[in-house]
Every structure is written in C-alpha cells, then in structure tokens.
Image (cartoon, rainbow, N blue to C red; front, side, top):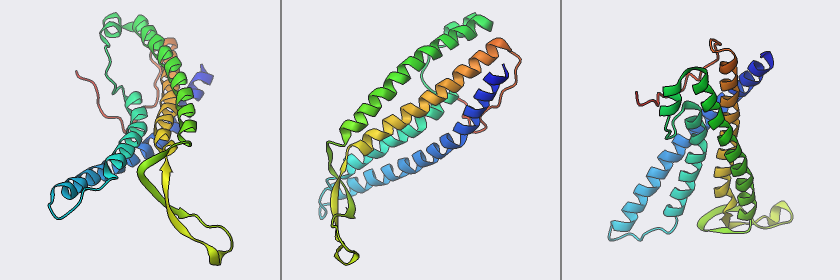
Length: 203
C-alpha cells in the first residue's frame, strides 16, 4: 500500500504543474486561433483586401495543439462523455472494480495510440505544410556569410500535438488506475485532489 500511495503521489504532483502549463498554453492557442480566424474574415470580405492563404492551416495547427494540451486535464477531471449509470447503480466495491476495469481497457487503447502517434510524427518529417513557414537560417559558413529565408514547416510539428496529448493522457490514466486500486483496498483513504479541477458532473 505505501508503494502504491507513493507512486500515485509522484504521478499526481509531477503531472499537476505539467497539465497546468498545458492548459495555459492551450488558452493562448485558442485566443490566437480566434484572432487569426477574425483576421481572415476581414481580409476575405473587405473589397480592397485579398484573402490570405495561411490562416485556415494555422488555425487547424493551433486547434490540434490546444486539444492535445487540454485532453489530459479533461481525462483527470472526468470531463469526457461517459455513460456511468452502471457503476453508479452498482456502487461500492463492485462499482469501483468496474471503473478500474474500464480504466485498464483505456490503458490498452492509449498505449496503442501513443505507438501510432509516434509513427505518425516520424512520417510527418517527410511532408511539409502547404502554407505555414518558418524564417530560418538557410546559409552555411562564417558569420559574415549567414543568410536567412522562409522554409515550409514539416507536418511533424502538427502531428506532435496528438502524440504529446496521448502520452500525457496515458500518464493520467495510470494515475487514475493507481487511485482506483488504492480506494478499492482502502475506501476511506484520503488522497490529494486537483485544486484546479472544474466541476464536470451533470448532477
């Protein structure tokens, strides 16, 4: 039992600041995405301006990253859509065992997702964005001969959002499994709770 509690505490206190940072970055990505979309609306419909070719892909890039950064917090807080009538109806130790069983199934799914996400990121280095670019150094040699230019962004940077999200969700899922096991063994055990948690119950 002390080993389980120590492992749970390590994951909980290690993940909490990471998830908090992810949510902060996701909020910034959301705000930037809204600004980019509004800018595209202005450029598209004002008669003396031409529509830009990059806002749609930039907004999609930001949307993927804010999803990957927020999904782990949603998993920890129970924010995903779920049918929990059976565990609630059963209640007690049987309900806890059912929840643990579902978490173990999710563990298998997330392990598979992490593996597929890693392969997807690797394949993304072979392809480049159609409109998103970086301003980077393209010349070589001495400092006097440095040259810079625009280079198209590899799609791996976009795919990386899903891989990061799946890795964090996997760690959160392991944390939830440890919590379920501890509460099955000792239902009255007091465990640390996330103070940032948003109430997601429909009750």
